[in-house]
Length: 345
Image 1 (cartoon, one colour):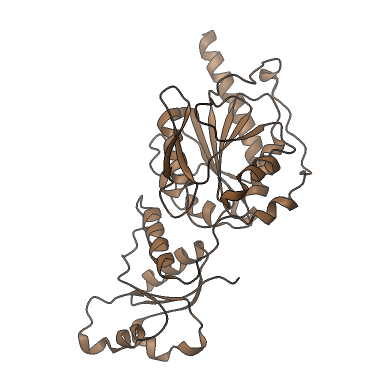
Image 2 (cartoon, helix red, strand yellow):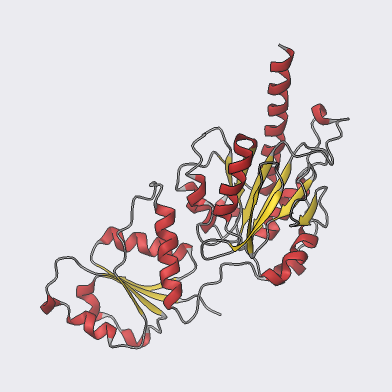
């Protein structure tokens, strides 16, 4: 199935550019992008559009709006009254993008594919990259099974399973860390995802079970349909409700819920994916020392999600899956050394 085809009518050139960029991030094909006063020159019969997106001019009188009547009389759905886009570096920009996507999706006959196709799981094998050596400071330390002092969120969408698998496969066993993995995928294949990603990893992937603590060496796969959070005792608890937003699990909400309990003991990595999930939440992390990393866009099957995060100016490391794994190992080693040096003094 091809990408949903959209036409944009906006008088402001900057608005045209931002609207096109946002829709492309979410998997739409922008076929035409012009001003309303050039609408009559558009060969509408040959465009085969799925929707029109119209930013209404503020100063046009009724006599100059004949083009709108013509548009509304057609068979293609029309989304009117688009909010003016905030600055891309604004905290409200990811939310604006997501609202735009939700409104347009609601009027479409076909929606863009945001979740990963399950067929990709059958193609995932072991990665060729060597496993990173375990730092000597962790040698002889038996962290397995102990409560996780640090938790990292791994967020991914289209192209994510392969990238996350390469990241986890590169990590050595014995690190004092656990993960929460939020992946957009068909809910029917939640358990398949767990088995496939964990096949060659030193880390145990597990599906969600309420009140089962997250321990070092584990990767909790976030439930796709129902939101969860951590209780005051650090136990995962289902809220019995759908994730907010257009897709599940909501990476934004996973980040917020993990941050609520783990605070500075958490980190966040966004991998390949379509859309901007995760970008809205990371700008709320006021502590700049909390790490927010993304997969290098040119190594992604779909770079929209990492690019959206980078545009927030909140990302402090960018690398391919192996580099991200190496960065995490070094980060955990440096954290351990800093902690124990301060204790010794």
